[in-house]
Length: 245
Image 1 (cartoon, helix red, strand yellow):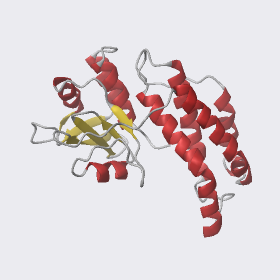
Image 2 (cartoon, rainbow, N blue to C red):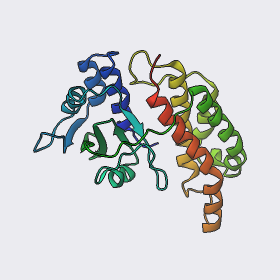
Image 3 (cartoon, rainbow, N blue to C red):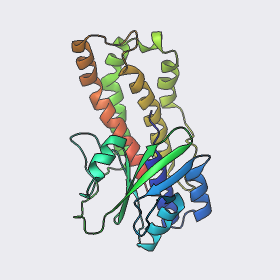
């Protein structure tokens, strides 16, 4: 599964803006051992440390930042700021507030370059409707059940021994490291399941031995697994965007 620095930024920025964690703890959780720089932050002429973006959000009166996972044909939640849609689609992720949006780009295993987009004057766009976590969890269960035959037909376990463990782990309690204190346990569980299924999808949608190899087979496979991929995307978004009561 691809890394989601925009998800981490959204959840930790929201935790700090709402007083659930300190600035230092939020920044430590975001940086870990990686260098982060932000280009395009309003009021700056060059790339600046990621912490400046947190401060800019608070100065603007922000209270919440959301993860958006856009795909072609579905860019709900992305404001119409110049260049934002294109950058977010390329990165497949964005952290979006009311005044500022940030899109990450990995520059290797130890560096992330962020591009900030000033949303001042952009037409307001309502965020995507996020159903209750239990409803999203149920939808993910249904998508897994519907995709079970396709996953079996691909015979992934034969070529990817980790698949049975990934699927078995869906019913087990899981810990997701790196989330803020007070995160809803259901959000943690949902995110853990989504991450496991994203890994299974990565394997299933590859053209490794045992997968579909002809164009027709690949198209049929992709069509069969698309609902599961969409459910994983919705679950991931809902988990990162869940705000504790």
